[in-house]
Length: 145
View 1 (cartoon, one colour):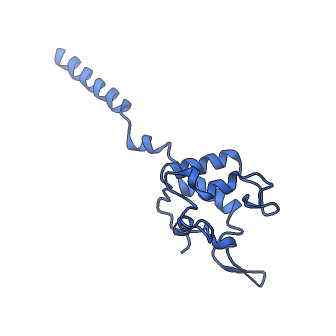
View 2 (cartoon, rainbow, N blue to C red):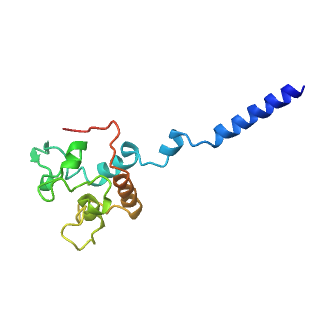
View 3 (tube, rainbow, N blue to C red):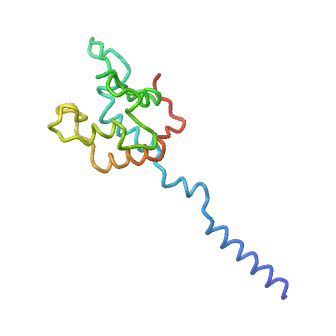
């Protein structure tokens, strides 16, 4: 009987310890998922002007400023202005993607520009900043090349 009580006590202690130990899944739960959280924002607010060259209504549409946001490598590469500074992994405040989203509507570099879509909400900008600060991990997403 005493042995069973001790065994049960040990088993209960192990169960409690395991349930309290941080799992890698729980640790990753707070990380931003690019495909689920950031990509939809870019698709909605940015792809219209910043995607791979394509034909639309009989006209060839090129990415504005040479900036493409439809592929992981392209996001990191940046456009004609500030190449390699569009997204600086770990440094949201140094990333032009964020800088242009935070500019006032009256600024010529504010993104998206007036008439091209709704400005990105403060919550979504904060999410993008968090993703960049966490290392700008795209997961398995490669997008267009």
